[in-house]
Image (cartoon, rainbow, N blue to C red; front, side, top):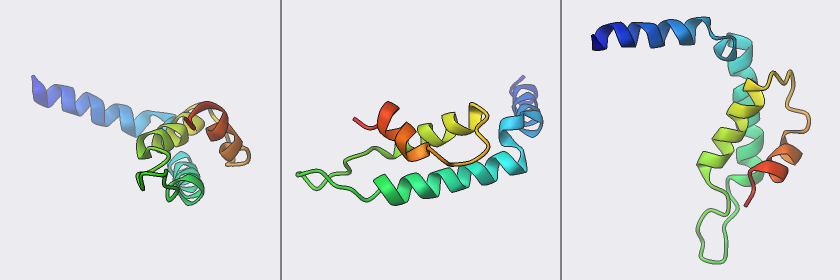
Amino acid sequence: MTKCFMMETTMDIQTDWRYSDDRMKLREQALKILLSKFGSELNESYEPKYSPQSIYECAHDWVSQGQQTTIGIVQYYRAYYAS
């Protein structure tokens, strides 16, 4: 039964438009931008100011919403993900 579930998951990723080559390239670009802008900032305790999870979720949501470019992603992150 587990084997069937794994095959269904693999098929979903292969056919889901969010994981096409173009979407994955856009996701990569989004992650690069967000990580370069927010990934190295530290708070006063020298801990990351922004969580890697929030950065990844923002990139994922951006791509999943059908955005075609990364224009506006920094403002989007600030508005919805930055704490």
